[in-house]
Image 1 (cartoon, rainbow, N blue to C red):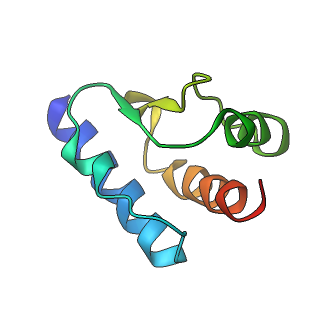
Image 2: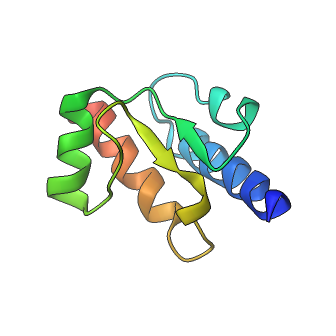
Length: 86
C-alpha cells in the first residue's frame, strides 16, 4: 500500500506542475504516510468541497490513500482552480 500511496503523491504533484498551478508542490512528495498537507487555506478548502466535491480537512490535509488512477487528475484540477480563484 505504501508504494501505491507514493505513486499517487507523485502523480498528484506532477499533474499540478503540468497544469502550471501557482506555488510549489514538492512538499506533497516529500511527506510520508496516508495524509498530506496541501497548503490550501480554509477558504480554498471550502471552495474545493462546494465547487468540486473534493473533501479535505479544514487545515488543508488530504487523504492520499483516497487518491487513485480515476480521481487524482480531478483533484489536481480542483486544487488548480481554487489556488487561482479563491
